[in-house]
Each structure stands twice: as structure tokens, then as C-alpha cells.
Length: 465
Ligand code: 5AD
Ligand code: SF4
Image (cartoon, rainbow, N blue to C red; front, side, top):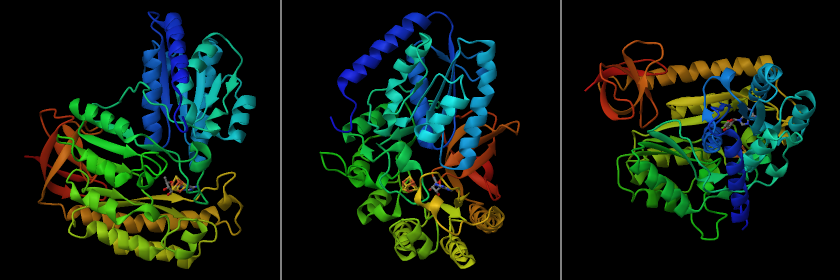
């Protein structure tokens, strides 16, 4: 069945679900899942929680009372891996107190051989690890751990597949993730993702549409289509299709909801896709287009397959007759060999494009990727200096753009009470801008209109109309 997990394997896992249920049900057992990293990991964790729940575990936010502790790890930068190891380290204590506790590690970090070995040899209390492609086998791993079978370090995730039908315990009743594809074929020289998430695999269009129809029926109002490179959706499917066709089909679904795409690669951004995004009010509010660097030379060394001119032409097309679209990007500073001149070219782009916000990252060498072995690695101090300059420049731009919203009325989706401010609610516009407003009534999960009265670098403030 190529990219899809076959029926027999799903049946086998369902049997494990039932076996675990017999051992766990009615005993008040609880599970805790710690999630690091991107939205794809958030989405995977909702499946992990759904599966644990189906087996009879109640999901808890208190790790101290958990019988199963899971860490869903990220490997994109060194910092993420260090955090994962520190959280796993914290769990040692729980197992010392109660040896029956099950500890599992999954996600991108545990899909790397050297990290798997480290967990095996230096973290003796970890019962099992598996990568993103083996998520459907969680029932089997839990069952074996419950029966005190040998510790297990899965390597199957080296050839990940798609498993449909895994239970999902969504963490929101109005915002939802929908994976449309998994993996990446691009091998940008700095990036670990293709090594840990495997090659591109697209879900069938009908499965995606079914999921979206169901979400809309249930009242979901904000749906993010997830994939490492959503622009190449469908290329690997037998029934040849593409992202534009998918968007056009989604636009036929009735209801009041927003659609986001996360994330796109400029080299695959076709005119057809841009037109599909612009043609529907559901999709035309925001676009995230990672640039990574404003220097053609660095883009080449990153293996990005586009130059600045091509990138800017996509931005121009997105904005043509659609001036209100908000734009965001990812940038890496301090890539090997990045000169002051290269860095200044990146600075020039943000000043020229005027993104609403920018996600800037300090280059972090990833073991096994080509860039980690490149000459002329930039010293950390210099990376930080450039990073600070970039953030300051962008903050000024974001503030100016946000201030231009003062006096306008914005449709927002309400997210609930603000954590720090009594009586204040927080919400987001379709363009992903945070809007705070005072209100007596709780409109969480509903669309409302807010008149903007104030703005700063990171948020808008206003009054509900
Ligand atoms: N170092 C720093 N940033 C990275 N990213 C990916 N790999 C690395 C790395 N090794 C950034 C890219 C990507 C975003 C998700 O993370 O900007 O778009
Ligand atoms: Fe990583 Fe590049 Fe794939 Fe994005 S497109 S996941 S940056 S390899």
C-alpha cells in the first residue's frame, strides 16, 4: 500500500488497545504528554493523547499524578533537544518513587540514532522511544511496557508511513490542526527535518475533506492545514492532485471558518496556488512564506532553489489586489559563511517587504546535515549580535504596521481570558494578530468585532463592538 499503513497493522494495534484497556480501565490511571516544537508536533500529541485516552488513560496536566509520562520531542535546534533532555531528566525522580510508571519519548529527537543511543544508555528509566512515523504503534509500546517487556527503541520510523483513523483528542473546540502531508524532500542544508520525518507523503484528498467537514460541523472556526511543504501536496499521490485543487474543494464547504497554510516553500509556490489563496476570503487573510536569507549566495548554500527576485515576485503576486494580507516569514541568522554583507541583504528585505512579524532563528548546527560540516561557522557572539539587530529592526516595523490598525474594526476569534490581566480577553485576527480587549461576557471560541484603539509591537488593543 505504498505510503499507507496497511489494514492488518491497524487491526493489530486495535487489539493492543483492547488488551491495555483490560489492564487499565476503571483504575483511575492517568497520562501526561509534554509537547515541544512545531504545530506538527502539537497535532501528533493530540493523536498520542487520543490513543492514550482510548486505552483508558485520563489525560492530566499534572505530571506528578501521571502513570504514563510521554515527551514529544523536537530536533530543529540544539536548544529544543536540550529542553527535551532536561524534561526527561526530571521524570527520573517519578520512576524512582514508583517503578510502575511508564516513560516514553517520541518525536523528531528520538528518530535520530545518536539520540536514541543516548536515551538507551544514559536514561535507563525510559521504557521506549519511537519517531514520528511509528505513532500508530503506541498501543503496542504501552502494552509491552505494562507487561515489563524489554525496553524498546524503535527504528521503524526510519521509513515512516501514513496511518488514518488514529483517535485525536483536540485541545481546542474552535481551532484545529489538519495534517495534509508529512515529511519533506527538500534537504535544505541546515535542516534535520527530512532525516527525522522522512520523505513527503500526502494524505488522500477525500480523507482531508472528510476531516474538515466534520470539524466545521462541530463548530471549528480556524483550521490550519499542516505540512512541511504544503505547496507540494499531492505530488506523490496516484490520483494526481495539488494544493490549489485541495483549496478549491475546501472552499465548497459551507460555514464560517478560516483556513491557514503552514508552511510553504517559495520554490513550489505556483501562480495557481497564489490565485487559489486569494480567491477565497477564508484563505486570503494571512500567508507565511519562509525566506531564510536575503542573500542569493546564502540561499544557494542553503539549497533553497530560489533567489531573492523570485521570492519577491511571489510576495508581489500575493499582495496584488489583496493589500490587506498579513505576511510573516522565517529567517536564519549566522548561517555558515554569512558575511556582514549577506546579513545586511536580509535586513534590507525585511525593510522592503515589511512583514507583519518575523520568526528569526540563530543557526544551530544539526548533526548529519551538510551545513554542520561547512567551513566558516559564525561565532555565537556574532550570531547573537546580528540576531539582536534583526529583531530590533523588525520590532520597529511591526509596531508601525500595528499602529496603522488604530481606528479600524477587526473580526477576531476569541481565545479566552488573558493570563495576566483581569477582565481582559485575548483573541486573534485572521491575519494572526493578537487583539486584547476588555469584556464582561466570555465569548471564547466565537467570532467578534473589535474596534482597535491602541497598538504596540506585539499586539493590538480595543473595544468589542
Ligand atoms: N538552525 C536554525 N534554524 C533552523 N530552522 C530549521 N533548521 C534550523 C537550524 N538548523 C528554522 C527555519 C525553518 C524554521 C521552522 O526553523 O527557519 O523555517
Ligand atoms: Fe527543513 Fe527545508 Fe524541509 Fe522546511 S523545506 S522542513 S526548512 S528541509
